[in-house]
Image (tube, rainbow, N blue to C red; front, side, top):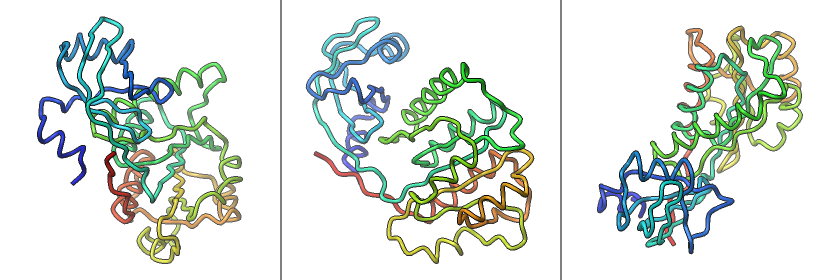
Length: 264
């Protein structure tokens, strides 16, 4: 059992977690600002002297005491600091963009299921098309959603969210992964356990591609095959895009093991 879990067992009232961005993280002077400060003092009613848990989404977690609580800023005294290593086995989910509510639900659940990276992809049959002026706002919203999910489920490492890219651009960088998979309805597609059994890496970085509502086009499947992606089946039933993504993550998460938490 990790020290983080032991601390929360000893301090059940400290189960609420708050986020400090890596760029603002200073263990000698921890500060909650703006949204997190308001959530801490106005929603959760935390006051000076209360102890809370803070994290930065890059593996650092601290037990801290509130030394000064203001409406837009909460200053903290660090009582205990620990570092959780990043998972040795990493999963990159490259999923075609789908309609807003379903995509946001996908991001939330992918974070819960341990995706290391989330790559939105633009395919021939995507019904969602984002303009250049929309991308920044969407990324901000999606990142916030991932952080809120990390707070809820206890993740120390937030997934890395990439800019939406076209499929050919994503396929041009498959060499950085140890194993590249694409969800397929083809009868020749193998199961994920079968494919992983042939992987020689002890701690693989796996890429899994999931198509949009209308699936990848034949030309896109051919492009993926030329890039070395292995077709995998997620069962005999045809799944919705977001269900397929979470099914794949769940299977991969069960089969791949992660690094243990280490305290400092």
